[in-house]
Amino acid sequence: MSVPRRPYVLLVALFLLVIGCSAGAVQTTDPSAPRGAAGPESSAATPRTVESVRPPAEIPGLGPETRAQIPATARQAVVVTGQGPDSNRSAVMLHNLDDPALGWRPGAGPWPAHNGMEGWTDHHLADDLRSPVGVFGLTDAGGRLPDPGALLPYDEQHRFAVSGEGFLGEPLEGSFDYVVAINYNRTPGTSPLDRTRPLGAERGGGIWIHVDHGGPTQGCVSLTEDRMRELLLTLDPAKHPVIVMGDAASLAR
Image (cartoon, rainbow, N blue to C red):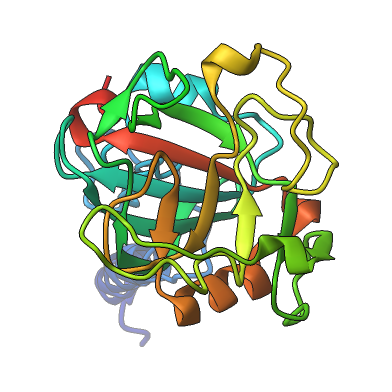
């Protein structure tokens, strides 16, 4: 006589149904299984980092009016910052623009310097004993001593010899051993000794960077001899160097 087995069949079927659902639930957690897009509040959302874009660095101490005078082609700038509008003492920094995306970077300095005996002026005149404020090209060099390896065209001449005394009684000898002509009221591409004055003789001229003699100048900027030599070895005509010069307040305009 056979025993009915239907209740057992039902129990087995229910058991397999439960196991199957559980197995399906486990499989959906497989990392290889496709997932839907995560919502805005989902913990699966990947955070994004927003990188701030920094503007190119500017030369410190220069205001918008002064910066606008620097040619777009310039990649070197000698910045001469006077202590005050009537001061004959200043500081010199060399800045480079090797990567326009990064902006200007300090290259050398600060170096102590002298400028005109009476300070600075926006309208230089002959014999006013003030240095002109502005941005000027640096294209030509020279001196009494042999070329130390200058990159700028260098004119070695005995006519750069100078004698006499400065405003403080200091000897002027050797002041023009090395010079770099500042393109104020002169013709670029000529010797610093060239006396052509495009603005007229009354506007002065012969404004140079030269060797410091220990006192104020008549309008030039002066550096120690070792710094002049360093400058001559650094200024590169391919980088269109300029000088940015004036008292701090004027440069900040």
